[in-house]
Length: 240
Image 1: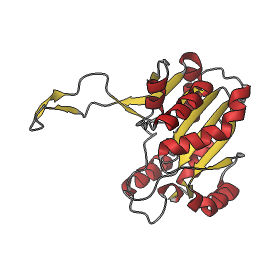
Image 2: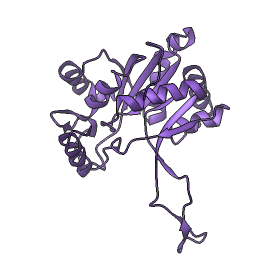
Image 3: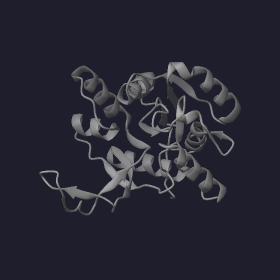
Image 4: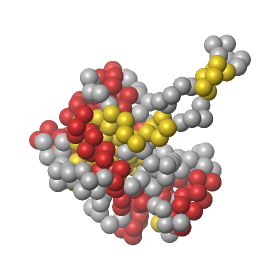
């Protein structure tokens, strides 16, 4: 996308704290195989290649430490700092931010991208665009248009037409100025505030205007077993 990025001052945090409940797996779905590698290793390898990325973090469940060790040794091309996550997504994000805190306060890290490890087909170009947009406005998220939504009637018994223009499905990575992001999450921890995603916490505690940039159709989340088959097909076609 032709954006210039300052070398090494962006950190990427990949979250791997989910489970296989809806997927139907016995364990964490991000350790399932996708085209000869684990789901999780795809995004770690891709985002680690984005120009301007310095620290690459993996926030994982303590129970998955051995899976993480084997995956990193066999499949991941970049140095990865492993952080134990918390009981919720927001707690896990805070664990990662606290791990980076000294580097954030010193200015060594100025931007943080947070990505869902269950989205294996994210591109390096999208990661670079998010860094650039976050540096420009303070916060950036990718989104893809949604035209398949409808607005329910007040009584819940019918539909009142389409949901209206401008509706998007939000993806990751979401990127933010590092200092305000850390401060927002520390305040949320004190207040007991739980946001729906990273952007909601930023919007609750800061005046940052979060910018939405075009996401990617292939950057879908592996939620069910058939999603893994779709991702395999995308890779086989050479479009990922």
